[in-house]
Image (tube, rainbow, N blue to C red; front, side, top):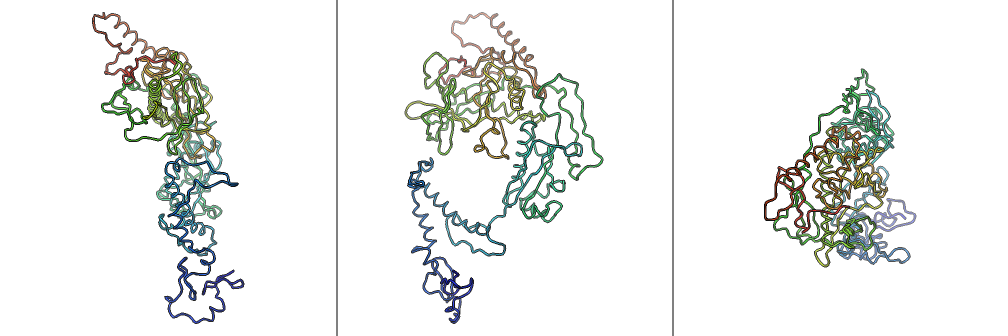
Length: 640
């Protein structure tokens, strides 16, 4: 039924926008100030009878829509009393709700009001062209309803390799499209495209690493001309307004769909392609990509480049030295162990300090049943607020006892966290050098882990790692078995990382038992999309060291000897110019022999007992982790 614009009553046969017969025959009022105003919805009618219009009185009850919204904020319902269909009670209560139910209820009420207020934007989006929609009259703490933002589509239809002015077939790629609000900065769009290109080329079978945006060009799919950088300094809407009327760049079909369709062309360097089966070294040759006299598009001019093969002989990569991988535990004065979250902090030189947060006590909920168990550790799901973590602890350290004391568990957890943080520092340098040398390696990272320790009740401690449910763990080497992975870039990268740690520490340490999970293999429910950077997350690594100072699993020189005898260099080791492990080990054993000879030639005439000297003499005044005094333990550690 249509509503009379004079008195607000509705009539079955009245045309929309017309007045009823009674209002038509009434004399017009002298001034608009004499018109009636509905006190509930705010609508104005010339011949309104009373203070409430017909619709508000009939459909909104005694309080009106505005009052209902205000009451929803002032007196929110308790979400814990909601039930599922069929009268079943809901048990999926969030941690936030359990900690502060009142704040949770108010937040839910605000969300409900926000959805009511966003009805204006939804109505504008659904309305036919030319139809006017009145603004919402609801008021709340969220402010004024903003004007709806137009959405624009960015699409990439193709990825190809550039080859002397021609577009060669690239890796397997399925067309990608994403909708962006018109006020989105172009930097955000280019960042998404960068990660999309990196993930596409690093995947099998190509396994080629893209390091920065200068290694590819973005072209318009229709014209094959370059997307000019001058046009991309603002927002997506700015670019659309600049090119939407140019049918050479945006054809009519794309204009109707509000879409900008691109083509990514990559400067592909054959010398950076990983070699699954290494061959004997050959005298390197410089390869020059010829300049074509006639490029097939305007963009090809910007893509011409000279590419020198990097497979040739390189100057030796200078190691950081033993000092970079030897640390000394320092007990800072005044540190109070009254909190439950701690981690290692690296100081100047080779010192590391155990630091715990002094003013923050976290509420941690740990499930009773472990979801995973290994040879030495068990893992439980745990929750810190809304964050879900894996809480690990040691139940067997192979010392012959049937149980692990709390202080032993804490010591082993600190050792493991130190190994993980040392690995993270080594990965940063490894990836930086690989990028500098333009060597294709898979992206590596370590989780943001820390130790949790109870401060009330019984003594418990856990190593907290981010929890990725459904992740498939891949193992690339063992504690006593060096990696031999030749079938994938991920495996070759892990083998090269172990060699790099041995090279960079001048043979004093090596990472073993390398394992982790690839974000590209996570279930679809856990992934962040095609534009999130994929990486292999490593955890639970072991270290063999000359000083045997890295806790459980450190087999000392015998473990290092096993690695030297088993490791086989791959194409990444050679491309980085890493020194052969046998040559490094010869220098290490020579130093050990010299130290043993010196120690045997000096008679022990002191009457007072002395501490055992470090196995490797140092002229820089440090002894690594050989004196873990705050643990009250001896310097030797059990082997895994």
